[in-house]
Image (tube, rainbow, N blue to C red):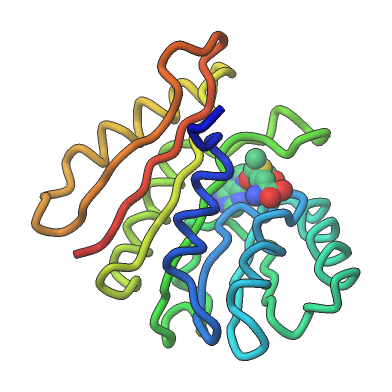
Length: 189
Ligand code: SAM
C-alpha cells in the first residue's frame, strides 16, 4: 500500500514539525510509545510533558523511557490532560506540538477512556499555549461506544474553531470495516 497508515501518518506530521530542543506534549501517555517517539525527536535539550490519569500508564511509560535511557527528556504527570494548565513548564514554555491518542489503554481497563469534555478542555488549553504553526494531533478511535460519543463531541467542537485561528484537517480510510481510527491535525495559525 502506498498510502500511509493512520498511526504512521500521525507520526510523520510530528516528525515534520518537532525539532531538537522543542517542548511537546503527549496528552495520553498510555504505554509510552508516543512519549518515546517524541523523546527521540526533541533530543537531549528538549522535553516531553506526558500525562495520563492511570498510574499503571505512567508506570509503563516510565519503564519504557528508562529502558531507552531518555528519562532526562521526559516529565511525567499522573493527572488528566484537562489540567495541563496546572503544570508550570506547560505555562512557561513555547509548546511546539502535542498528540492525543484517544480511547482506552490497550490491554488495560477498557472502562477508563478519554471523553469529549476533557479532551476539548485540553485542546483549548493547548491552542492558547502552542506556537504559531504548532501542531495538535488527535488519533480518534470511534469503534467503541464512548469513542463514538467522543468523536461526535470533538468533531462538533473543532468545526466551531474559526479558520483564522487554525487549519484543521482529517486523514483516514473511508472504506475500512469497523469504524477505523482516523487522524485530525490542528495547525495553529
Ligand atoms: N499514547 C499511548 C501509547 O503510545 O501507548 C496510548 C494511549 S491510550 C489509547 C489512551 C490513554 O488515555 C489511556 O492510557 C487512558 O488512561 C488515558 N486517558 C484517559 N483519560 C485521560 C485524561 N483525561 N487525561 C490524560 N489521559 C487520559
